[in-house]
Amino acid sequence: MVKIYHAIQELEATGIVTAGVSLRHGGVSRSPYASLNLAEHVGDDPNAVAANRAILFQKTGLTHLRYCRQVHGTDVINVVDQALPTPTLPPEADALVTTQRDVALAIFTADCVPIFIVDVTTPAIGIAHAGWRGTLARIAVNTLARMETLFGTVATNCHIHLGPSIQKCCYTVSTELLTQFTDHFGSTVASGTNLNLQSANVNQLVEVGIAPAAISVSPFCTACRTDLFYSHRAENGQTGRMLSFIKLNLSTDT
Image 1 (spheres, helix red, strand yellow):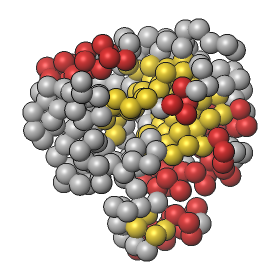
Image 2: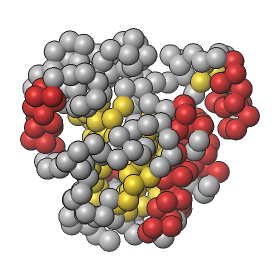
Image 3: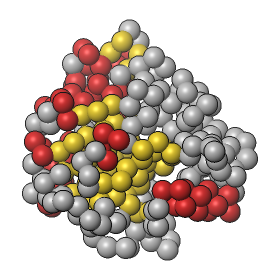
Image 4: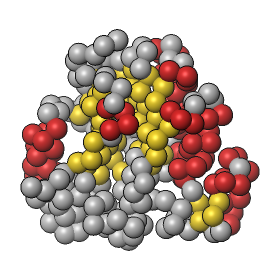
């Protein structure tokens, strides 16, 4: 049987969420989107995307997705009901948060870092899309701040996971961009001419009070592992998207 998603066990161990990242196999899309592309905006056949989502729903038990039109910014949407996505174009944002149960928040990636946030006390959840622009603009911290304002979330009550994304082994960037990152996040984010996006996001989260032990990072590099994941860089921009999702379960111990 083809495995179509990877469960985030570090977060599911809290007992209050279902969380995962889709893989690239087990769907119906054709090359260059083969085969479980879940994004509508990359040029794939919409019917194939719909069929792929139905496959994901069947395997995961999800029923609806709440997502946004990602623009590499820092806006955060509070999902308060069943309103997203809208019948027309989804609103622009790069993070979603909620306290609603059984509402799956989702983002699409193919190298960018999916950041999952679980506030185990409130309880509340968030998910953010962090490419280099979003990371430099501190989308992870902005999402936490929004959760604090909306829900009273406290950093010390949170568990964070950084999902599969391009890692320092494959992420060569310009000297100018690398300098911006080291100026903001310290020398640990640089590895020669390569950028460590994971380290940059971890550093900013620790700065605002997240315990290092409460942050887990996927070992998978999307650019190295195109057998499992889509990679925008490794596949020259012509590829599909994985879907990262998280929802508060209907029944929790909180």
